[in-house]
Image 1 (tube, helix red, strand yellow):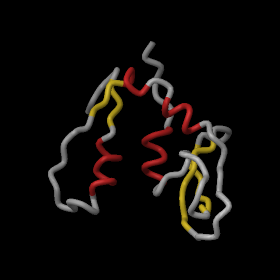
Image 2 (cartoon, one colour):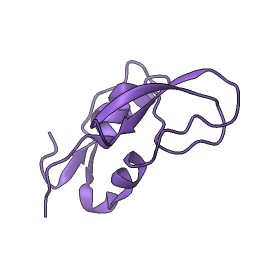
Image 3 (cartoon, rainbow, N blue to C red):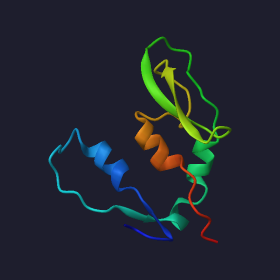
Length: 101
């Protein structure tokens, strides 16, 4: 819906707001890719980090080698930002976007 040079984050924001307003209105959320800079690339290139704590939290991380989001168990503390609550959110943030340069 957004078109280049915008990133459509509608699905991501819809998922994040489901707990707040599960029957809310759907509207496109478009962010200029220039504002994001290398942020998604930086996050998505981080290694999987389970952290030292002993919680058992199913999470998803983006694996640059396979270009897929994979499930892992997060310990609940420390870790890094390559740590998503769902595969869908992981893919929205980390999927390869066409080069707009």
